Image (cartoon, rainbow, N blue to C red; front, top):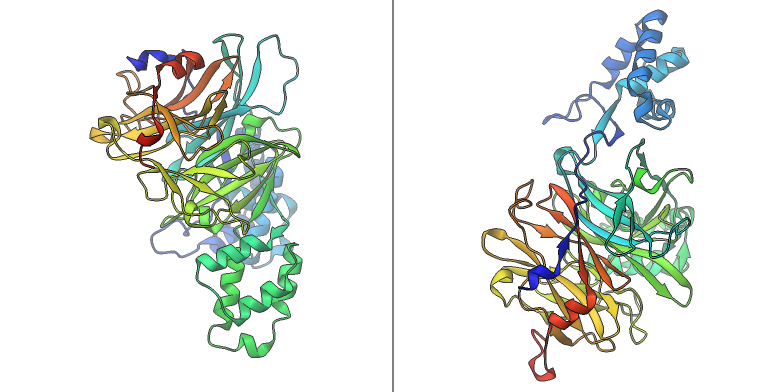
Length: 496
């Protein structure tokens, strides 16, 4: 049985409800019928005497201060967001303002509902390691109240051999601070094309923008639009469309003294307001050096969109939309380098077939070449990738997932031609990893799923989500895995 190739490790990560962030809380805005109660609340706080105000604030800091970084700064920020509701904001003492901020704050447990869908890449810091060891960064999909997903991290050391040590994840969490980014004109062009938004307003704006531009330049170009264009029936609607499309790109950064496991990539654009799901990280290398890239699914509560992030150090991240027919579904995974000068990605544009898509000169992912369609009994509902292809001497190793009866997810493997990855050269008969009795129960039962592993010293390290209840780790000897695969002759390309 090929299943015995994968050896499950004893180490697991489970959801920790103590991992909390602070979010803005506005009473009334969480109701089915929105009616803010902010003004009344601020008035009540303002009428407290100085002694009661000080006592309440001290008690709040005693209860929550150790759980968060810069609690006072957060309270100040939340007060600033609602101060316009205060009848006499200037009359409030500094203590009262902090207390107002506390009343407009609440904790959110980022992974209280689920922890799943990990990927693994080499960590930026490889200092203080012994022979045969590699420090790795593990990305995690963490799900909290309301089924809102964010991206979290863990740090581990693998090797020598099959040794695994996961670092403690204690300490206050930090949400990245949104920052300005140098926007790309070609991505704006591609986004407008997908929205079928092409008129004289968009043509005028695009003609005036440089290839790279900041937010101030963008607004300056919009402000200079002639009135006879703005007064057309589509004028102001087009301006708003331009702003929405442009807002899809942003950057976020964390303080330098935060550990990786303390960083939370939290939704920061309208397209991802209901979640950032299933990040597939890869360490991409080209002539300019290594950089971390990842794809993830943005969800706004109604529709999904595929996005990519780029980071040099896993501390500052730039997020941009992915455009084109190859990026119209979940589950895109980038290759770790160019192949024949092409930027490639695995995708599932039709929802059920693994395909190969190429980035064109206009930064649009082209219509995919089908690689592998549902064929075996354990994958008849749909197939997809389990992360970026892994380069070996004999081809690109692709971990796949398939969905079978009772929506049971299992993991398999394909091997693509190293120089022509449009061709499957071998496949693993049967499954590599499937839900067993001790990991089939959870938030989403009967699922094992990964967003990417890596090879270290001849061993495939595969982190996986087990029924969205925990994250486990499995190892597979690469030579044994390759030897177990069955060759696919050129005339028998599966799905191609």
